[in-house]
Length: 402
Image (cartoon, rainbow, N blue to C red):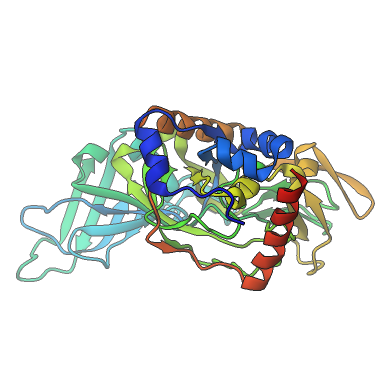
């Protein structure tokens, strides 16, 4: 390979001049299919991706400012949602899945919560006032033992979204083989294969458009919650060695991202608290990543379609531990799949409509020069050389064909 070679600097210069050709991942599918990866790489500079779905491993570092006299907060609540105070005097971390203390809904149905950390973050980004209570054990330099105030996001000296695991590269399709309804982080699952829930935007999904993380790492600039953010590390549970198709697409949950960005710049439409019946609270978040088309290899990856992506159907009642079957995202998005001889209706937890909107916004930002590509300073851990060589041989075959 190596027929086409571009650099980040060259692409960014084209963006500054308004000359960059930018397509969404959905648009790129047809270009690669019609013209092949080499010609697509010559014509296209950037491909934008997007996803909007519940992302439990999310939260924010917040500094709420010194009180008079100062307090060393050991226990903190935001709208009765506990935050972690063991960072520093008035530095705290609030997690998206932390439920409100003494949530009344939990008394009605254990495991259900109406309000949690994700809702607090949404309220802050929406400009709503939030009650902050803090307790301290008292020291000579931090004598205050209690604080109770109402704050808005504008009042906070510092608020940064910092998410340990977002934008999962593929995920299971969840079903229920048992005789009773179950309540999971994949939503409510009806008994006897009553429904099949999935949560990935398929051909628009960021990591499925760069399966070996060739352009992803520390310093990659992204769309995060409606603002510009960054990839800061690989996410927790990052598993680059998950089994893959020959085209590089993982067949099960694989890569993840650790991301961060300025909470004060984010928009409530792209950062929303959610409650999952019988499971708890989470945060639905919008993430979009621009993929630079540095060569024909990246053109090939960004040409992936829903027909090219598979995931495993798994039983979340633990009646059966092995995957029941594999299905493509084209099948999932059709509205039903066949599982053990039964037609099962499919339900997305992620929003393809919003994922498409995110890719479009990112395309517009790059097109008007307000968003430049961030060159990663440290790439994410990736799959084995043997697996990548299999994919490279496929790309070389396509080059000859076109």
